[in-house]
Amino acid sequence: MEKIAFLGLGHMGVPMARQLIAAKHPLAVWNRTPAKADGLAAEGATVAPGPADAVRDADVVITMLAGPDAVREVADTIVPALRPGAYWVEMSTVGPDTVKELAGRVPDGVTLVDAPVMGSTDKAAAGRLGILARGDASGVEHVLAHFGPVTRTGPLGSGAALKLVVNTAVIGGVALVAEAMKLADALGLDEGTARDALAAGPLGGAVARAFATDVHFGSDLAVKDVSLATRTTQLPAMEAVLRHFQAAAADPDVVHEDVARAVTHIRAHTRRDT
Image (cartoon, rainbow, N blue to C red; front, side, top):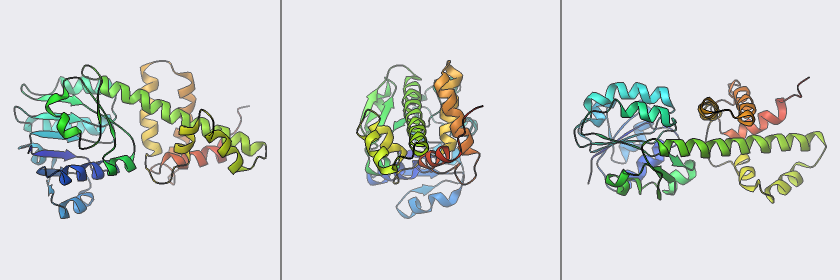
């Protein structure tokens, strides 16, 4: 069994790491806030004092971090410690440019795979995430399969690119549902009636996500992902969505909460431009 290092124990990282423990992989974990590793240590993982300590003897290194800056910071530490023959699987949502930047930093003999995930905390806990992996991920596909089915996406960076497309669509859909519900509020419609009508139409999936209570994707992460998208090409509708989530993320009671809280914020605070 490969020795695996898992770096980043946020809302997604913890349940994903548990899948590897259940599969009996020797697992070293690291997180910036060490207390988040306590539960995994009790289940058999080794808690490393730093990122380099975690990856030094690892056959597979998995990073699941908040965004490009966090990945770059960790890369500064782990790149010199990666051993020849190791795979580095970058599973964060960072966009293809960051992946290509990382590829220029990995030492000879180390294979970088971008393999971001589709799904939230519920699917992570159930091992039913969708994995968007670059085409030459064959050396680690059996490891990634512990998290859910693997889809090959093409060359390096294509997994990160497709994840950005998927997240942009989901976040945009959530914002659209929020505005539709704000219109329903302004028209005096019963909330349940309006919600059911939207759920029965083509926006059904977005409605379910906008009112979800058992998953987590923070408004701060939505801002990060939509910002990556709008810097890539001109997306006027998503620029408006970005402003919605920036306003929600400016509220300390909302910023780290699931985007469903941003829906409530949008309904309560958006005003017509004059």
